Image 1 (tube, rainbow, N blue to C red):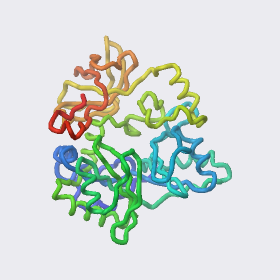
Image 2: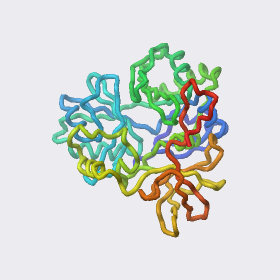
Image 3: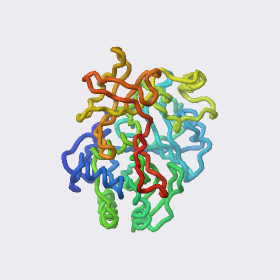
Image 4: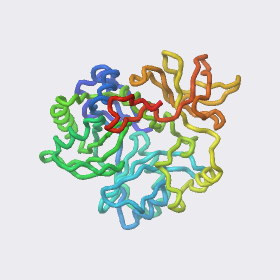
Length: 368
């Protein structure tokens, strides 16, 4: 694993630093539950120093990257992007990636603690280094919540990226060059803003200053975790790993079944044509005040049937929830299971939380 990086915002008022996917970040700024509710009601600002980026350039960049990852790269045009996985020959997930297309390059975004593995795997197939892969010295903030677009458009005075996930545009703030990408990490409308690291603190201060009137709060990793679990978003290292098939995790948005060959494609196609996989990532509603630890086993009729991967107390639902892998036969909603600790659990469809259309605001936003 690469050494953890130190965020440029480490002195910006955060509390209780923790390692999060290769970066040292604050767990909270005030109260993690208040931060969670702030994102659902208005907006939250997150330090995304745990994300790393590299460029893919050269005349052969499209063919090369298209043949390496699980989603369609040839179909991307400048200003668009895609979610994808990098697989091994067994079809297991080595990393998950966000790929952004520019006029003369791709920018690829992944977790900081996955960067070395991703570059090492790509360079293994990059014969003669014909396709230059270069790390980018970029940091990122993420603005998430129903007020995110209003705040960001007010600050940057630009037309924001289109509604399609991973759309992106260039922008400026004074003398700073930025890139803004539409991407949710919470189930809410969301954007990432990329900037050189030594201007990250300035961008943070400007966004907070201009957004406080609309309820914007600085948020830490505890709130980010509870928000993404409610949204049913799997995270590499917790819910995805080198023993996971993309279809087990339900990553249909990371897959193209028409693009042709890529590493691991035969295994993915075999699982698709079979119509099911043996394991499936599901949501669990748990009758316990304490969230179970990752790795706790799930039982049915006295036999082991699955395992917890992520869990939290959900501030939105007011109860304990979890993501877990269970055997296919136990994956239907309302299936009753028992944790090894004895707590009852019930399978539910993902996501737990889904923001309702604007016309339904005021009704329950809970998707469970």
